[in-house]
Length: 142
Image (cartoon, rainbow, N blue to C red; front, side, top):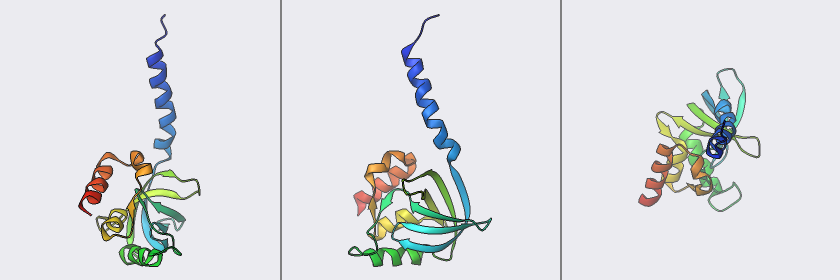
């Protein structure tokens, strides 16, 4: 039997990628809090709270210039509304990182379009290809 290094590398990559897919979570619930321009508190159907960071964007912190306006914009978009969250990962602070949809609108992308956030290019490679393309297009059009 011959050992093929390429096969071993492919197998290792698949093994490393598998846990991320297993941990992916989809939630239905309500946005019950808005911490800043890119972080919300989500109450799921089982009444469990989740602190969620919006995938694909970064926004000013509350005490930074435009931080309060970014927070208010996100609150206007999502607070108290039913939402769906697609959460492929957890960040280093323990927050779920999610694409959040309210009434068919990606609220992260809408924050970006409104000028209260920017595309978080550092993590763009972790976004779905379609989302990455939408964010890049919105950035070009801004």
